[in-house]
Image (cartoon, rainbow, N blue to C red; front, side, top):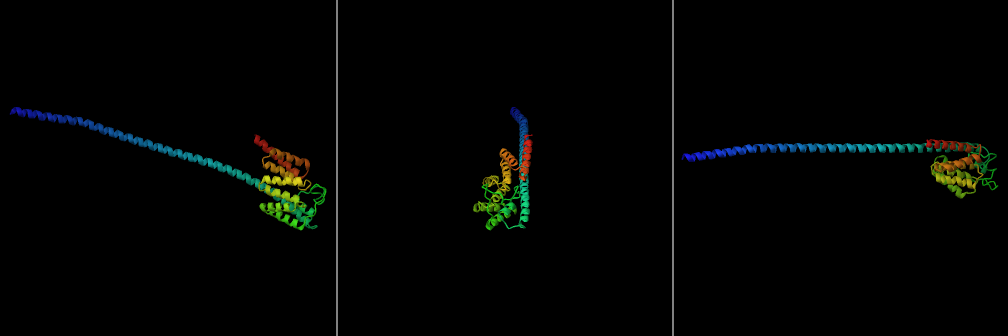
Length: 285
């Protein structure tokens, strides 16, 4: 009986020891598992922080890219504004030139109106603004054929005046149509040279340089002895320069100096040649 009790006691003690050992072994394992879980959490948080940092850098890069685009567009806008200002200045200069010519014509027409009724000489003189030396269009052949042009009829004068008044009023489209119609209907009129000239002016002032050049050349070809020939040749040079035909423009302006020395056209040709030379020197520097 005692022996059995002793064996049971030993067995109980053994089981208790085994349980204690198991508990001691399980404790460190649980702690290790907790430490690993915490490390994983820390690693996960660090990864999230890095992702956020990357996202922030991406936003900064996007903002910088947008700022660069804005700066580029601002530069383009400033360049366009500069070009627009240049065009505006050129248009104003052309308008002032045309307006001053028309002002001289208005004064000449008013003076002529006090005398005889409208005829070829008075009409051409009123429209030219640059009288030829030694007389007017009535005393000098307009076509170079040795025959003075016939006086303008009332219908011719009316059609010419309508186109000219449109030009003076700044309605260049109506003026160009009026002068074209006049030339088609009255190609041999005493007013035809002036109609060709002001047709060219109506295109020149609206920067339609190719058509303007054609009109000025047609005047010179058909009416080389016209009072408007010096101005037409001058405007050929101006127009060639606007069309970037610089060498041709300089040659034409030199031709004005040779053919019409001492004239207003020659003075303007010299001024333009000086300006071209100055611009060329500035471009070279």
